[in-house]
Image 1: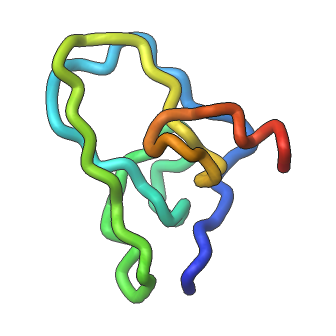
Image 2: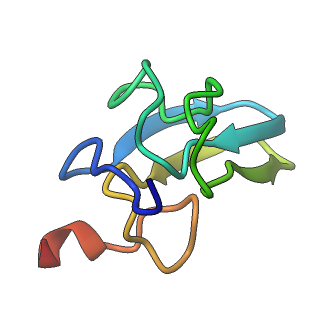
Length: 82
């Protein structure tokens, strides 16, 4: 597999993502989708790897679930074109 699976056609909104390092699922196969868009290792056997990102200050975020964003892991509205 070399293409990401669309986990949902809308982003997951997290009202208060706490400070820390996160690993966003870029393959769309993680079992927690669509509510938890974090890597669970399901990408094994693909050429897709998770995207690490840092949150320096607790904040509201919109994380991409369609896997088409130009600004991973954050939603840029690409799902509207699907």
